[in-house]
Image 1 (cartoon, rainbow, N blue to C red):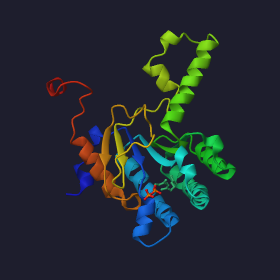
Image 2: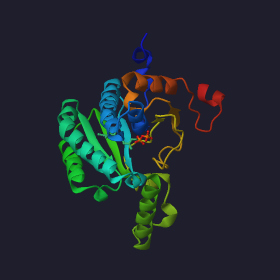
Image 3: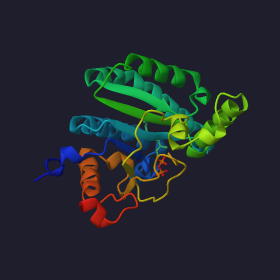
Image 4: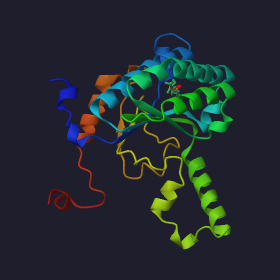
Length: 247
Ligand code: FPP
């Protein structure tokens, strides 16, 4: 039996987050420039989005560009930004056909104008779609987001809009860029690296982590099914004992 048919669709993660890693090494393996790896990574983005929507996953968040990625050579940063504009331009129709809503998290105002515009256009066009939400993390960092939320809550406390003693987990979650989105139950990172790299630090507090040696351009539908099956074979205890979960 193939992996897809083994998945229990009653126990799907509602939200899957992915750190797409290994494009550069994949390109090197093929004797090509790093940008070739990113271009091939787009096909994996397509496949995973389609597979997740087909299964009934509600949110898919992809780490497409971190705050730290600006330190890469200008040529690579420019190529990534161009690739985003191109891909968004090409794929918005596919998102519409598949009833998928696009969202973005991160400090979007610092993106090049054309990338920012392509993104906002895509978000606006797809805003009423309901089958799945695809969240792109762009110029995103978990520490940045937590600091922004803390600043906002501090300002609201200072102005008398809220009492600091009332700040609880829910209020803090609602001050993050992911407000309204349930925390991911499953985090996937490709390419054999086992770091969090400043991704969704608050939201991943109770998530299951799945690491695979596959490079991102090799991570296709079947790879996603395997990750979900692995997740379904784990027991999520949230600090309780096994007996408490079973009973
Ligand atoms: C990590 O591989 C990948 C990125 C930093 C960029 C991911 C972007 C895409 C797949 C294309 C655009 C995406 C969308 C959503 C349209 P790496 O360069 O760090 O690889 P390495 O660790 O092997 O060097």
